[in-house]
Length: 161
Image: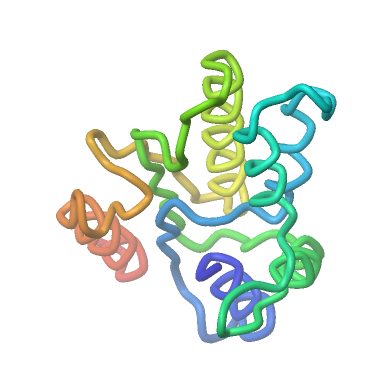
């Protein structure tokens, strides 16, 4: 969700944003892309694919009452970040419960996640994508130095160092 907010802010206030670090963030098309990877729904399928479909529904959730589908739609039309320094960090470990999912489907979903993160790096002509070893979705907890290094890299580029 924070990546969506950051991208929306950058599109509305481009004069205030000189660089960006995105840490394993939501892609605005991820629900559609994940659903496309899933097999057709079947009455005999296990609970796991059904739960995964629900997780990708992007409906209003939690106490914050956030409609992720609406947020994704807003961000989808924001366009390029221009030429600002951009680093997209991606986890290396699976981010969801794999129990009951076909191992080939898990691989497909993980590869799609990486492709979406790579797509995000293309939002800027100065964007780079980096997979962070031994990290879950919480890269800032698993590998805080990787996040700090990405921020310092963007700052150095902004300063012309």
